[in-house]
Image (cartoon, rainbow, N blue to C red; front, side):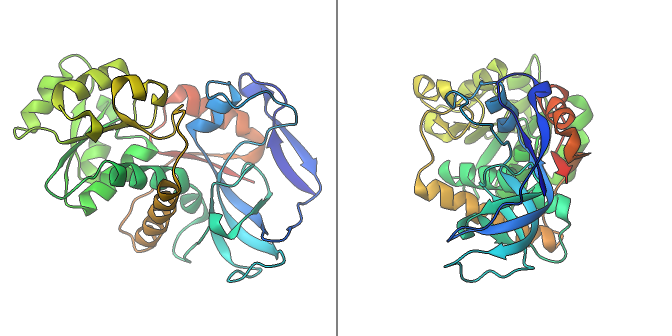
Length: 314
């Protein structure tokens, strides 16, 4: 038997339930992965609360898209993958589980030097950060401002941008300033006077903004600092993007990712995986919960504003 987390109605974390089901079997073009760790992302609870509209619930929903584990079954027609392979899964359905099915396109090989929790923590943050920076056209001569730099996407974006040779300024609360500096960003505390503080550390100005905070303050500061709104992107308030004239991915954006953007996210995960295994990309784990405590994990993600990524262990 397998264990999965599911919910049958929208609402708070209390709607999540852990149930036993038959272990999935691999259909043609699929593999079955025995999950060793699964990542918790804000989109998981936003869908559960219907903040991110997905239509009515007609069958139980299974949250989660990030995971890491070993392949235990390979379906017909799948090549290049074998039982026993250690993999990272990005974009699968129902990752809060002991077993899940995935397609080869959703798999990245997990190096031996990368832990299960760290591997499961990479998918959405690394993929989103890399794709956003590529879509914004970040270059080595640019100064990048990241709102919400201490979250999992913000931390990944800092590291990718520095690899590109860009100068990075990142905002966070006072307790998280040291973390931003540790990653190589110029830390700035958000709050009243934000624009002046940013200008004081960026005398040549800001060229690109990645908003991972979604606050009115973050948007207003972005518009005050960057005239070209096509170089401002958000992963939080996508529903406002068209009226504001900025770019958006996820975060309620009504525009689906293009195939090119999907591939960029996969490329970002592959790059982060290689770098992390070599000790050149840092993955911060905010908290680890057993699968049975998925509700507590989502509660922390929604209300605790953790630094880094939350992980579930089946």
